[in-house]
Amino acid sequence: MKRTTNRVDRKTGRSTAETRSGSEARQDFAPDVPRTLTRPQSGLPVRWHGGRAVAPRPSSYRSLSLVIKRSIDIVGALCGLFLLAPLFLLVAFCIWRTDRGPVVFRQWRVGRDGALFALLKFRSMYADRCDAAGIAQATANDNRVTRIGAFIRRTSVDELPQLINVLRGDMSLVGPRPHVPGMQAAGMDYQDLVPHYAFRQSMRPGLTGWAQCQGLRGPTTDQIRALRRIGHDFAYVQNFSLWLDARIVWKTFGELWRSAAH
Image 1 (cartoon, rainbow, N blue to C red):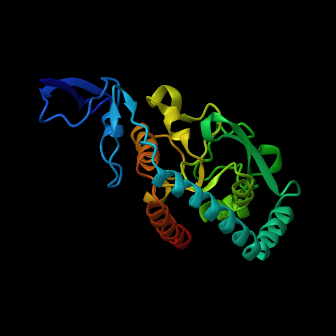
Image 2 (cartoon, rainbow, N blue to C red):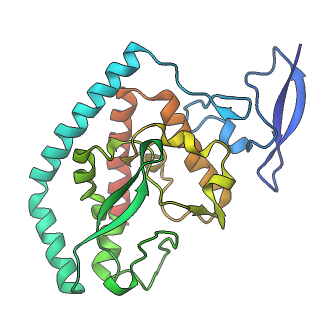
Image 3 (tube, helix red, strand yellow):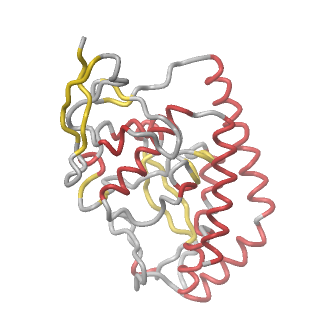
């Protein structure tokens, strides 16, 4: 019995069909699935079949883990908001002194199952230069970013108001980062770039995720890097566990420490 697997075209990042014996082929891919999405993502496998990412099997263990995860989200968000209240006030004051205007910036993002929600962030750009649509991503030395904004972006302090989104149920502490509607990477819509893109929306988006704790943060101007980021999201959804969430939180703190140091 023969099955079809893929070989990547190094120039395009796309896969081409190759026939191998059933004993050699581990998964069935479609010819248009980039190889970058089918390989393990920082050690986590990604399962595909017929050009679609394989949904995790429903189980009582996974259901219970998701209930516990939501409980951890609520307790963690409440504790975070309480303990970080002095920092919130300090950052809000610095933003207001730097550029008079709203302290918190709201932007529509795509959540679980494609539902839209208003994501909250500390405003890091000048009030008259903010991009409510979020299509034009911030880049290095972006003249839209204020001085305090550059610092809170580098240290991810600007993301802290999303603890309120976690309490509301829009987000989780850990999960794929929420994208703006029509999010682009390397000049293409993610939905055109990534086969089965909506698969990453089968879980609540998170403050941090498997991609972010592996250093895959910042603008998505490179196609391969953008594909790797989504591949990590797919891997997280398929391999979710409370232990994996704990690893992601631990590694995220390490990434934030290194970012702040530079």
